[in-house]
Amino acid sequence: MRDNSRIPQNGARSSVLIGRLVREFIWRHARKIALAFLFMAIAGGATALRAWLMEPVLDRIFIARDSSLLWLLGSAALGLALVKGVADYAETVLMTRVGQRVITDVQTALYARLIRADLAYFNAQPRCSTRIGRSPSSRFSSSRWPSGQSSRSAGACAASRPTPRSRWAS
Image (tube, rainbow, N blue to C red; front, side, top):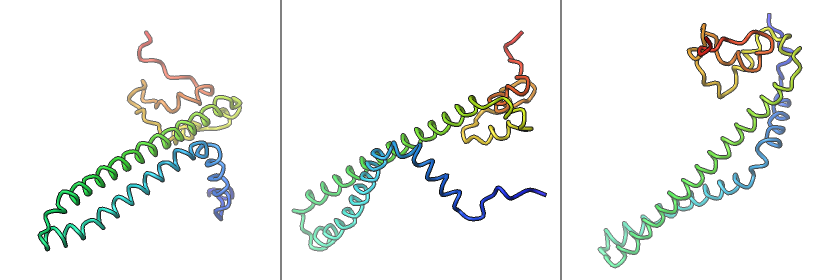
């Protein structure tokens, strides 16, 4: 039977963890996130203006046959499409960069803590490779290591067991 005493019954411990992660890893990117939100608002506004612009296009150009507004409304629609495209692109680039930077910072902090950990920690953990293997960026397959051992077990748990023999060693 599993001991579930460490699993929080309410969300209090999760909120503390989320608050700490935001303070330590996300808060330093607040300006970039705010700028990305500004670009999201610009893209949303451009979308709304394009929808609002369709009424004069339909009423005055197609129904009333007023060709004098054709170039004006056409260029306005094109300009709004360009503004929306640039704002969408800028928001995507900013949020992707912030997301990748946060992931890098979290992984660096995790591995730095594991490197500084006492060797007794690794000896006390029967399968520390499963803890390391839960990292979101474990992308090495077991085919990269001889004898089927995965690369995850060769990282932080190397102090507690022999490392795999390199395939280039003679």
